[in-house]
Length: 210
Length: 210
DNA sequence: TTACAAACGTATCTTATGTTACATATAAAA
DNA sequence: TTTTATATGTAACATAAGATACGTTTGTAA
Image (cartoon, rainbow over all chains, first blue to last red; front, side, top):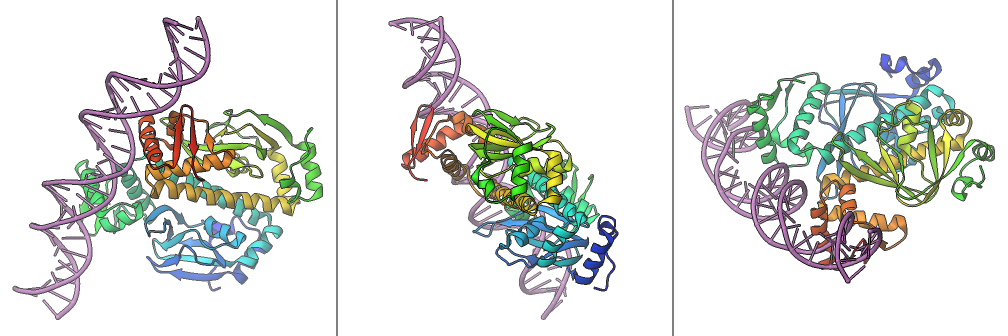
């Protein structure tokens, strides 16, 4: 590995563990829009995010998609971890939302470290905790909000993750993420523009307030 | 504690751990429809289900509810566990679906056992894994299914949990669990009856096939 | 510059779901 | 038996969201 570990991890892991990570983890650079994993794929390693962001989606048998949440620096994919430990196939699809750097930890090491390092156990538990929280918010969003509210929330979330109030995306892509149609998104975006919450351009949307 | 530990747990935990559980766990009998915990409650112990079933709900700020999943014998509430470990308030509401027996484990013991017993760690990891899986199905259900499909799934799930093809419930209660209105449920139930999938009576519904 | 494809706007219609209102049925209590 | 509360049936209407169709805009490449 030709990359020193990110401060986020350096501050929570024990020295010995950091050394092990530096020895065994594989550093990867992922360009934006790369699909990292698909439903049904076998999982043999677990990612630690160093920079960038990953969007995690659920896909049904008809191919309909739904964005569940974003992973950011310092996060790991608890779903992937869960699959690793249970030796089952991936339950989710993951796509790089931005150019992303990550460390891949092989599954054997995970099990070893769980017994060996308290800081690793805490990290794993905390990751599960965070993912459960995030999934609860996902449930809230689709169970209790209308599409216009979901859309605004989505736009704000995306702006937060990218650190930019201008989103470079199309109506069709938004429709995929929210599991609805392009026409519905165009309609609601127009409504949000009328309300002065956003400003529409070709291939981009400017958020007025986050 | 005046109750020997359930075979489900006896087969997965180490001897020493079982002894500790028998010494420190508090045995509780919960009558049907009892609310075990509410959103915002402080959590000081974690339940192990010995018998019965618990339904786990999400509630929004307007008081709207949504059933997420059922816990059954051998399950623990990973959400509660998660809150215990994170020392945060409960994110969910839990109600006894049936008369239920459980063991309450104090939070301090949990942390102790995590370092001490491999079988406990595995149990905790597996519980997290199961809960993530279950939450994904919840997301699938509300994201990809129409209300009539959700209703049928709900009825079958409820029949499975209670071990009875006759469900003793009202349309209003179903409406609460699915976060819709009683009229909608009555309408869809009538449709399911026409399709010979169920048989409607006052205060009960007979499921034809599970 | 023209041609083309992709992105976007919008009208029209359909359907699922939610709302209101009221009638009827049934069990339990008086 | 009569009363009462609860549960259920159903019509009529409102609204959110999905589907279809087609026109317009805009960037890019020939």
